[in-house]
Image 1 (cartoon, rainbow, N blue to C red):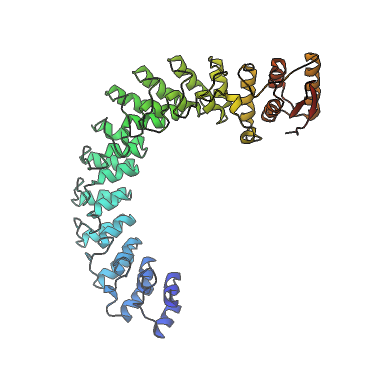
Image 2: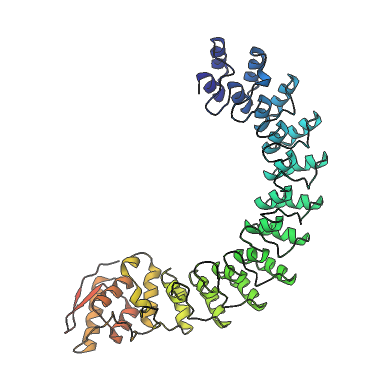
Length: 478
């Protein structure tokens, strides 16, 4: 920027005067294409704008090289009502075009009701479509959520169902952005809730795609197609399930929404409810025939609702799915089961719920490994107290005969060994179950009494050396 640009941007009127009188050019453009006059107009500086108009005969026609704005566009985009009056009185063209449309388009975006009303009273063209996207000023107001301005346009005769060059109506733009009050207003003015774009669908599909459940409910009440979709083929019921909105889900189901509809990732609504940990919606879907073991066949992992729920902190949901007949030992395409997914997400309550429901912790994957075989202490160490609790739950449910990496030859008196463990636990004052399990595995321990004791009492990181069962502490307090 030149000094004159900086003076105008900062509102330094006297400095700007001195620079102009010293030969600085009013028409010089910044790197972004703005002249000093545009900068003054954007900031509503009437004193500077009036000064420039007097000093430069063509000031009103000067265009920004970036957007093609004239000073009136800049004033309207900034929402400067008084300055717009000044420029129009000086002869500015009220319908001049730019990349952003006419001054009325700019005022609609700014959202100043009085400025918009004034421009309309001065015969600004409310039906002029801008070249970039074919949007009329009313559509721009809707796109930016300017409810008061939108009402003024409708009062002035704007068409609530006008389409942009891409085929989008104002209701599409409102639904996509979640403007609930504007959506209600447009529907009251008979906006077409069924208007469909060739690639992004109808307003209801857009509202659902972007998670605006309140707008979606409003559109459904207005008669929109309850099985419409947008984007990833997300139906309204998918949206209700993903957001845990049980009342909206019930409304859709009562109107015969398809509980088996799949999106482009192969998710049915129950998958999304389970992934979100929403027990209420999950129960509702199951009550109306959702398949408890349906596979999400296009997500790359082919997971069931139970597998998706396992990674959420939702033990009650796991219990519900199991009670409704879910395959508790189902695995995804990578061989992971619900217990593994829960444990590696440190979901200790889920681990407890699954084990209490009868999950076989001795179950092996394709490589013949149990979950305890696969646990890598380096991934867990000191990461989260829940990790300790996960391992504690697994150990409490007894040692696995297939834990080939966890054997210990416990010679001598087992009671004496347990007493030694008790002394070490008290000395170290540690309850880090991750380090304990790492130590047990390093020592190849499978003695049931030792494992149950460690699981129940906690302790330091212990190294059990040799065949005579000697014990030495290598852990630290946590």
